[in-house]
Each structure stands twice: as structure tokens, then as C-alpha cells.
Length: 486
Image 1 (cartoon, rainbow, N blue to C red):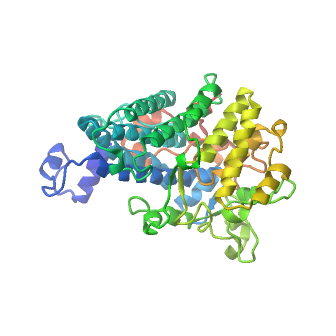
Image 2 (cartoon, rainbow, N blue to C red):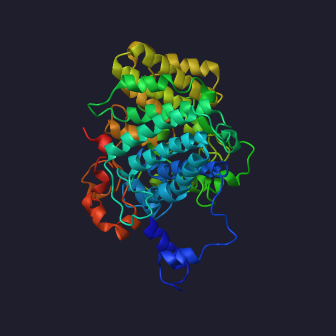
Image 3 (cartoon, rainbow, N blue to C red):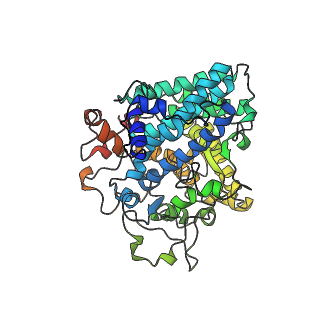
């Protein structure tokens, strides 16, 4: 990382002087602060967590057939599993946008005894490193922020997961300690509510443990134990409310770059998601959330396009814009970890443990909560839960497929949906109508995508390490990440 930073600064300096440590020592800004206190850093690292989630969603929404790209070039290539520099930038952004600031916040908070900030930093690190690892399949962890290392080493995925789980356990302990600086001074997510941060730590622990369903070590009871210590109600979830804030806060992104609305304006609805909501394959009964999530075309009809095909030859006006729906408006609530996700994790783990009654209760709670958010009429909610073929109308009718289908619908635009689809191998019995995109990248030999390309800077500056893990092989994107391997 230090090597790339030096290169960037030297380019800006137009090669006036040679790149060296001395360059940084003599070119410090005498008027700029070199240190601050953690409450001034926390808003930024929370914002960057949301920004990184957006970047992860660029690739995941194409892989899950929730959105397709309308632009040309790098973004458009994602739909057919081709190379995409923007999607790959999550790797860099995890370290530069988020990681460096978060590490310093943690360090300085530790020094002054502000342990609540230390705990929050560990939670956010676990969330962002998990996004990066789950998307790219590999990352640097042990030597990531070592200033003496210029050629980093990729760490084993299972090792990193164990480290992230340990971070979450440590965070809970830190949050139980006395803290010099009140968390409320910088907390834009929970306004200093330490108990809710602890709940988020347990929620993330449940999420990561539940990723291991293909592994012999998978323990649904451990997942459920984490769930029991997490959110008790909707108000406990990790969701940022943009209501009443300047639109630029959402449209420009946390760092003033490519923002939420800018990204969604380059995308269109995918046919798979729209058809699911229209009830295709489920008796033709539309999901009452259809009009809340998807915008209609100019003729009032709801349409999506086939992934990998440019609008299926349709007049663009016949496909409603992505921006402006429940999940896609500039003032939409931003779900880092929703109550629905937690309840559906509970439903899956309980179902796999054999506790169908608990699974069914959690499943119904998730659906009801999601629909109530969208102000769906109570009569429509009850009709959906009791009569719609897409749902399990009784505990005995509950299946794993129905649980995962609800995660697909209640977590639109969230990168966790792609984790689910890989864990269940894009199973058509769970995701009906799902198939490889048209014009799919032939290098993958007919396989579904399992990870995103290696970041270009790693190939250029750490090529031997990229080669060691097979990162230059044509079919690298079909290589399964560690938890995806049986």
C-alpha cells in the first residue's frame, strides 16, 4: 500500500524530485493537522462503510440479476462476467478510503482510553474486510497496514474470517469497558448507544458464521446464539436515515465521488428481479412490494431486461428508472444490517438445525417487517402470508428455498445476496429462472461467477503474489472463495 501511495504522490509532483521517504518528510504541510481525536474520525469511517457497501453492490447486483448496466465499457462488462476496473476497486477502497483512517482512529482511541471508539472501529473493520474478502476471495490482512511492507502477502480466507470473528468478540469487550470519550460525540449511526453497537457486533457475527453452511464446522446453534444477542426490534438495526439531509450527501457519495444515485442512473432493472416480484413462476400473483421497489415504464407496465443484453431491444421509456424506488431514492434509508436480514439468518439457521417452528416465526416476522416499511396495507400483507404461492403458508410448507427467496427480495442492492447465491450454487429450485447471462465470458467455461477480478494495481505492483494465487488465470472469476468450497 505504501508503494502505491508514494507513486501517486510522485506523479502529482510531476517527478520534480525522486520518490523516497525523504520526500514525505520534507513535504509535510506545516499548516495541516497530523493528528486528531477519534470523534472527528468516526463520522468518516461510518460513511466509508456505506460507500464500500455501494461499491461491493456494483458487482453483486449484476451477479444476482437484480440490476443490469446501461453504460458501456467497464461497468457494462460486469453483466456478462467480464473484467471491470470499477468493481475491482473495492479492494483498494477498503484500505485507502476506509482502512487507513479506521486504523488511526483505533490506535489513537486506544492511547487515550476511548475504548468505545476502539470497539466500533473493530466492528466496522470486520464488516468492511468481510465485504472485500467475500467479493474478491482474497486480501491482505496481517501486513495490510505495516509501513515497512511494500510487497504484501495474501492471507488465507479462513484465517481472515477467524480474525474477523475474534475482532467482533474483542469489540464487545471494548464496548463493555469504561471509555474516556463519550461515543455520542462522533456517532452518526447510533448516536452513542453502546448497546446497539454491541447488537450490531453480534449481528455481524451471526452473518459471518452463517456463511459457513458448506463447511463441516457450520454450527447453526452458534449462529442462533449470536442472533439472540442481537437486534430485538427494528429500531436496533444498523440503518442510516438520510431523510432531511442535503441530497448531495447521498448522490455524491461519502468522498464526493461516484455516489449512490450516480451509480444507479447507469443501471436498469433486471428481468429476473422484476419477474420474481410480478409473480412469474408463482401462479402469476404479484408481490405487493412490486410498485414500491420497481418503477414502471412509460406505459405503466413493470419490466426488466435480460442480463448481458442491452435493454432487450426495448424502447428505454418502457423500462422504469431505477432511481426513485423504496431502496433507490436519494433519501432512502441505508441498510448496513437490517432487522429483516437478521430474522432471515435466524430462519435459515433454525431450519437447518431442525427447529422449523422457530424458523417459520422468524420468516414471517421478516416478511411482515419488510412490507410494513413500505406501508403495504395490512390486508395485503395477510393475503400474501396466507394465500400467495410464493410464500410458505404454514410451518410445514416452509422450505429453504422460500427463506432464501425472501432474502433476495428484502435485501435488494445488498452484497449479501450474492453470498447467499454462491452458498447455494445459484440453485434454480431456490432462484427460479436464474441462468447464465447472454454473451457470458467464455473464459469461465460455462461456470457462474464466484469472485471479482484482482485489482489492477496489485497486478502491476505485486504481480508475483497475484500469480501465486492464480489471479492472472483467464477463469479466475469462477474460482470459489474459501467458504464456497465444499
